[in-house]
Image (cartoon, rainbow, N blue to C red; front, side, top):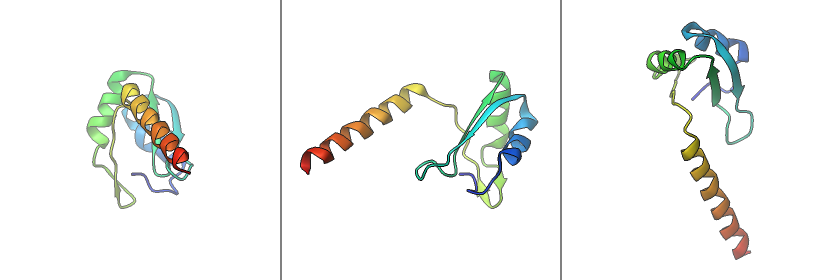
Length: 91
């Protein structure tokens, strides 16, 4: 739920208040604009950021902060591939 024009420096300013940020990856593709992955050095810093930034207002948009769930991401990817294959089979 990030503003599309937010800079990496602004993201580091926001998320860096809660601990050492190792990496921020901003979504640039059509389906990922307005999203970012923020990686902290310490899990407790990530928890602190999640607790404080969920619902935080950034340029009129409210942040939705979640932990990355690799199992959920894999299921979503598999479902997308299945739907794509089904659509290609109908052509």
